[in-house]
Length: 396
Ligand code: AMP
Image 1 (spheres, helix red, strand yellow):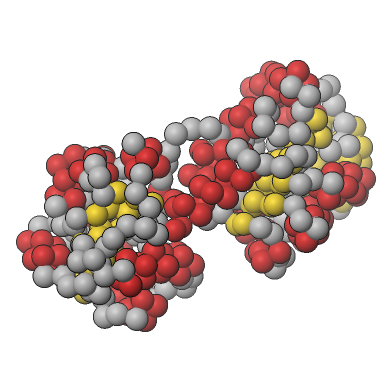
Image 2: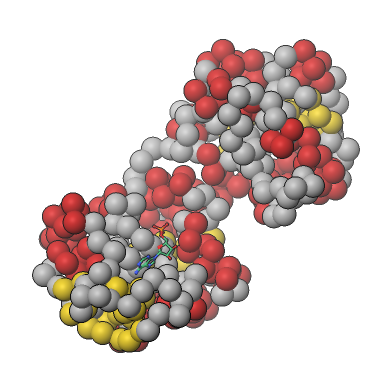
């Protein structure tokens, strides 16, 4: 596989699949430029090595062809500013204008193509569409980790038309390197902290991690399915009754593999799902009817903190409670701080998945952990052990 750091881009036209799916306000101004910032190092690397760049991305979920609110044209001023080059624009990602503008690119030029998802062929992974995109360039770089779990035309299929000249950009390779630091090369003891609402969203991760980690910490709404499976009374807490057996067999599998499953022993319970509910601490196996568990309790918080601080490698996905409400945020705050403290002492910590990233940002600890994954669904599927089409297509 080719490497962006050693490849000779002199006079090459390089088509880069970026993730420019950024939020825009009513005036089409970018309200969070994280994804644009992330793509800049790859773009600048190609430009400074003598190449020209063709950028392609999706934006939003257009249903039936072009729509102004989903036009990538709105990104041009910010993009030009961040790259330091006047970015050109093709009002169609394939077709005459794209072909002509791409053909006229000189070293150092940047061309942005219109939203790929104005064509249904993109998400369908259409080969003819991918081939048209491929014809615009000499080299393909995939730098959109966030869509790497999709076999779309621009994220996977297009790679087949660049049998020699395809590679990952820096966003993509950083994500893979950092996730592998946990699941392939993690220093022991390795602790995975899994929370969030439902077991159904996390069970494949749990099953895939069982032979890779030493501790699995369970928190959030999903803890109650495990507690019920163990015979506890969970009152009106969130539960997935159809997954009681699944939860049980995950715990059994963990035991066979000498992996410690840590289920909360106490909880913050409330009489309603409301920040102003009447709350109390309670043994998590003895929650009375009429009450629901909305956070881990103080005894559990301390136990999890000790475990985390004794770990060399930490993976965190999913909050410990309903952290959006202050009354039920304490467990998530304690876990976030314990991860930051462990990191300070030399542990490697990876935070991933929408809500844990939101939590770590909310508590302003994003710079005190080793790596915050931007991957969302792609990161979860990678941890589940699935092959990501966007990764496989470039590696093959
Ligand atoms: P997920 O997207 O599965 O990671 O779930 C994240 C959501 O789970 C957050 O919005 C939390 O508010 C919610 N959550 C965490 N703990 C609980 C709980 N004990 N009961 C209900 N929802 C919870």
